[in-house]
Structure formats: structure tokens, C-alpha cells
Image 1 (cartoon, rainbow, N blue to C red):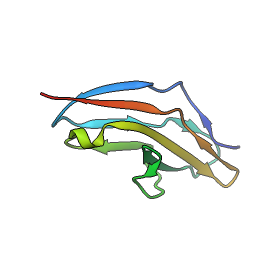
Image 2: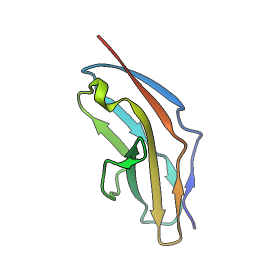
Image 3: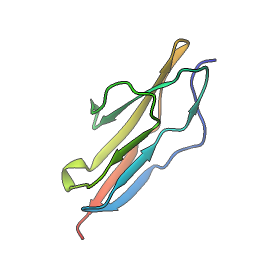
Length: 89
């Protein structure tokens, strides 16, 4: 089965500078699924089986538009973009 998104995702997220950011890309489809993350249309991760992107301590440089790409042997899917805002503490 081709990858498909489970849930609508979060369109916007605000995180305080210095705090942890966790983004998830909930997808279904035939195993194995692989995930790859981009920030402002540039890839920031390699293909991984992890559906989560975790940044332990954010700064304003990581604000922007995040998107997940999901693939398996049947196809590839782009998630909706999530706009991450980083607020000063």
C-alpha cells in the first residue's frame, strides 16, 4: 500500500527558545516506511525509519517551514508544512 497520512498534522507550532521541539509525521502504508525532513525546502535529515524529528534545544535559526517526506517501495508522499515559530524566553 502506498504511504498515506494519518491525521491532518499541525499547521503552526510555537516553541520557546531553548526548549525542545518534537515534530511528528504520522503515516501508514506498507512496511517499511522511511522518513526525511526538510526545513525551508532544504533537507535536514537522511532517510530514517523514525517518524519523529526531535531538536533538544531550539534557537531562532530553526524557525521556518518544516515538511516530512514519507516513502516505501510503493510510492512517496509529502506531508503538509508546519510553520515553527521560536519565541524569545
